[in-house]
Image (spheres, one colour):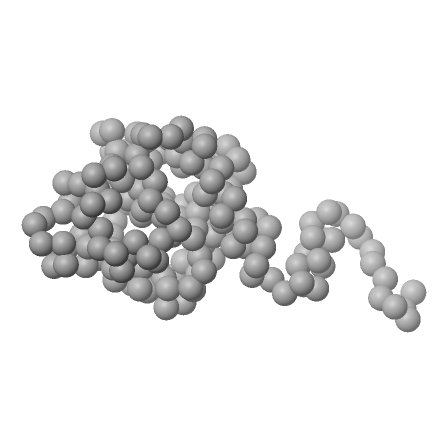
Length: 173
């Protein structure tokens, strides 16, 4: 159900960087695009609440966070506070959209349980191929999108997507 262009949104400060994290997240974005899904990449966690509210047409979120972004004290850590606020903004509008965190394996140790409970998964950077991870994320995004439309409207959209040019209603010909 990509007919209305529901992109997978990736937010990573390194999205355009030439470092290891940037190369990895761009490889994932390319793998997602090769599977036919649109990707919207953002590099700034600037005004997270505004961004979350504007992206009501997303099919999934991938939020990248690096181990270096954490400071001692996980509850007051700016990276954790920003991440929590962003996820709360998304969940305020949508309780079901897939949200993933992308980071190094040791990064997951810094993320509090209340945030982990809101996620569909933690993507361990470089532990699986970008293609494998992309297919997993796309499957979850499509499952989410399939649940958005009521059954009759979904069937009507599927019918139109197939290129059919006429249809009949009982009692009308």
